[in-house]
Length: 124
Image (tube, rainbow, N blue to C red):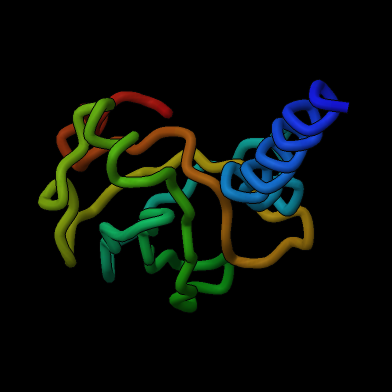
């Protein structure tokens, strides 16, 4: 009986710890597809749990569309050379993304190229 209590305690602790490590699924993004967008940064959101680039892109009809492009957390981006000041409103960039499966104006960022043709940070 004494060995059952520590075993049950370990199981309880592991069961409670699992949700803390949980994260939302990336299933909304089509990781097998890529899309290249060129546009102007409206906002670069450097925040947990994910950074976002709000990018204004002209669609096929010449109308501005705002794309919401998800990135990883700031701590991970810093390891890839990104900083809070890496993008500023008005910057012209080209972004390679994994688009939303539903066809919406959003995606997950794979690579960012600045107006000078150089990568911004390293690809995630």
